[in-house]
Figure 1: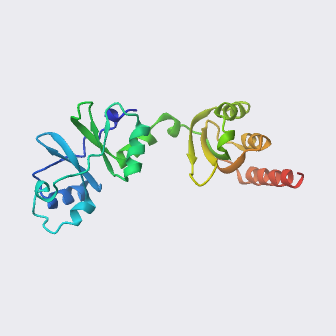
Figure 2: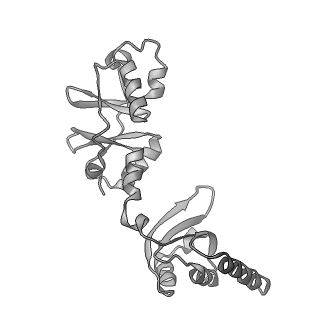
Figure 3: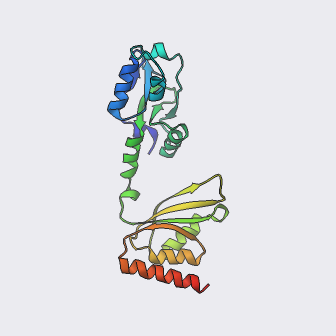
Length: 220
């Protein structure tokens, strides 16, 4: 998905001639903390709830209260990952979408983005989730995929989380199997650390898996 496909038509932009009070009312109505502001149809910037609450004269227009507004935005062809990165980087609840000539096309909000992501095939598919940890230098998606596929399963999606304070990374896998015990054992044989697993497993099977893992540990 790209930015143009993420626009939420239910979130309207403000006009520069709207009052600060109106802006707050709209933010409350649409459950956001930011809204884009247009002047003659052109994007002039993004106003935040905090910026408005710092003002004393809420009856005044946005044009009167703010000489300059920040102009965070993404371009229509930007990938959803770039959109999410921009929102996270600037701690926004709404992001503006522009074309290459900086013409305003619309905006999207975090709730709408999360809803779209949740509807993607890999998330809606039945399956288990596995979180594994490794040194960043040891990361190999080819090997991870081979381990999963050696257990007659497939990776539906994956993503990586890293921390600037650590040389390790966490890889989260969505796998098309709801029983992950065999896959977990295989990863452990390859010295991967299992941080978490989310699967359908009966209590007895789960207890047996934990018992076997304990016995393997004691035999080392």
